[in-house]
Amino acid sequence: MKSIEGKWAGRIYGTNTGNMFCDLKLENDQVNGTARLNDDAFGLVVFSVSGKLNTISEIKLTQFSEKEVLNDPAIIDVKIKLQTNGNIIGEWISKNGHAGTLELFPHKNVDSKDGLLEPRQIFSKSIKLGSLRLFRKDIEEIVKYIKKDFPDSRLIVSYNKYGSEIIKFADDFINELDEIKELNGIQLSIQDVPSNQLNRGINIDLFQRTDNEIRISGPNDSWVLGKAESVKLLFSQFTNKVITNYKKYGLTLNSLIFFLMLILIPEIDTIIKRSIFVGSVIVLLSILYLVHKRFIPNTVIFLTDLKPSIWKRMWPSILSWIISVTSALFASWLFYYLTN
Image 1 (tube, rainbow, N blue to C red):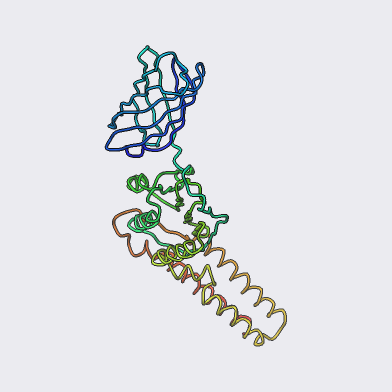
Image 2: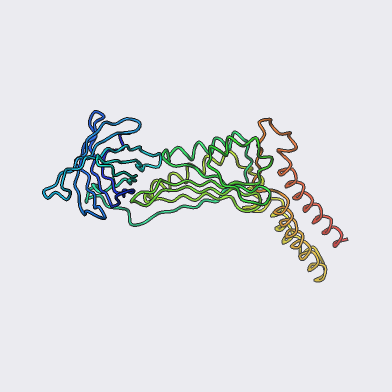
């Protein structure tokens, strides 16, 4: 409970009520300091604080002031406990029978140096990722890597289940992976705990049908750029390069069909046949692109510990090549038909 040292402000409740401010010092498990209570009935009362620190700290407040507010110095016994959220709660009772509860909140940033300049701008970087194929161990590796720079923060994971969005802390998500039958995509988000400065943050969107993207933000441009590149490098090992290149550039064979169309147009004798050939090829490539985008997932996630079959792992790439070869064969047949 070393964090009990510092400045605290809050209220007391019970037979007496009022605002309280405490300045506590800690030395060898002994608590000392000053407490100032603005009692709603008696006004300002100043107490000296003394006590011993343990799981439930018992301290005494002894009134002292240049001008006594009460006729006799008041001695108040207080039992306090530091909560996991950083607040103090407790009970108090005076020697004359008054009693109640109290709650104090930390105010530990008031001694910050005047020379410390807070950042006045925030930098951000977005990077599009390619088509991804992830296994359970990959998900665990990604979660561990992202949390590395945020030891005091908790990573948030969101995903869709039965048409509803589920949001969990990353630790709970990893522990419950066995219960998740299917995962079509996930979103990861983490940022610094609230402070008096602009926060750093990482957001990662991995979807089955739309673009995969990472977004890094923070007050330091060097950190933002460096972290963006390191996260991109992490995901590069999970990238399906065949599907990624298709979505980014178009498949090589489809591009080749288009250029061959331009070269072979003069071999077709009539303007009508040329129009049919050009229109058919353009429509074909457009349809194949839409089919590719609709049926070939951008992100595939396997949650089982067992390695999936070769077909289950490779079918997106195989289907992509089948689409490409089919388009090339159809364009060749159409050219042959129009020239004979």
